[in-house]
Image (cartoon, rainbow, N blue to C red; front, top):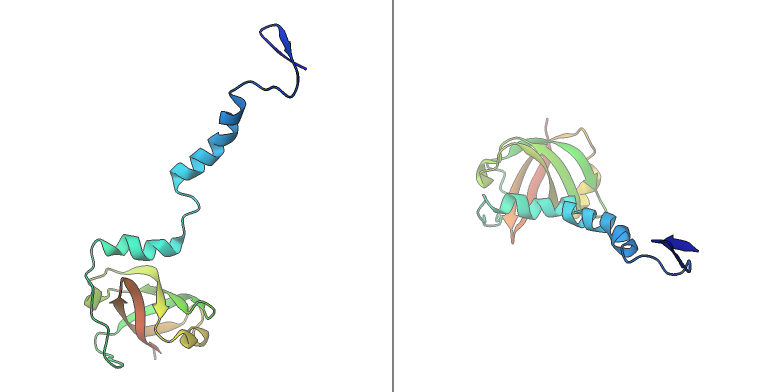
Length: 135
């Protein structure tokens, strides 16, 4: 039995504030935006200051940028690159996730590999249309 202001209450009856306390951690997480996916940053953070670029016709190697592989995921066909300026996208140096036009290429690269690549924005997604080891 619990007591409230000198009155005995059965243990199955709790004060009205108990459910609100239990929801406080859930509300805090919702306000923080957790668990936000880092993948969504690819589409939202960059969209504001980059325009759509046409897909490359063929394997154009003009304007290749240099970068370093920080992660490669063959299952998803994505690669994370720490790259220099991407002139064709007017993008400053940063680390970001790209979709590979040829997902099988993910298996050929490992963290630490230096690469030259070209990325395009295709239907709002940043796609590596050409990638090669830096020699």
